[in-house]
Image (cartoon, rainbow, N blue to C red; front, side, top):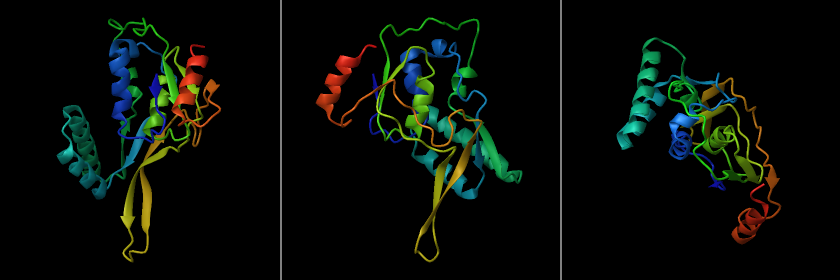
Amino acid sequence: MFDTRGNTGGDSIWTVRILEALYGLEYLSSVSWPKDVKGYAEIRATEEGLRRFKNALLLETDPEIKQLISDEIKKLSDALLQGKATYTRSMDINDFDFSKKPQTNSTLNPIQGQVYLLTDHTCFSSGLMFADLILSIPGVKHIGQETDGDTVFSQTSSFELESQLGRVVCPTMIKRNRARRDNETYTPEKIFPGPINDFQALKSWVIENTPF
């Protein structure tokens, strides 16, 4: 069971890594991904964004994430040099779709047990992206409470006003062709009726209602 209660987001690379660790890339590459296979992210090219990525690169220690940040810096730098307002990249779900290798793909699900996704009202951002992915995998059951919703705009930057009387927060990325609509939520197949943070009550309810 994936318990995402209270998960308001984070680095979206973990949505991919978690599923790769559980299912394996060979099986995931064989899955038909109905959501967002034609989607892509369009990102505004700014000097502030470039500085932010360069600072993130200095702090990052994971080689894979460092490479992803370096790729982002290259795309952003090229866009700035060419005078472009934006640049594009694929969305996380494309990682599985683009890695398909027909000669090695296995359609046999390596997980023999029932997989559940447990959510609450705070499931947001990369938590929702994880729901996009795992709920596309055959056999996964969704339980708990309705998720939060988001828009196609993300990756915000904030700027302090010169007057120091306020702050402007604006998105720098838009997701094009995203299957999930603005503020669309996920409603579980079985809904927990009580306080989602009451662990003992939730535990008893899960035992009574799974498998289903």
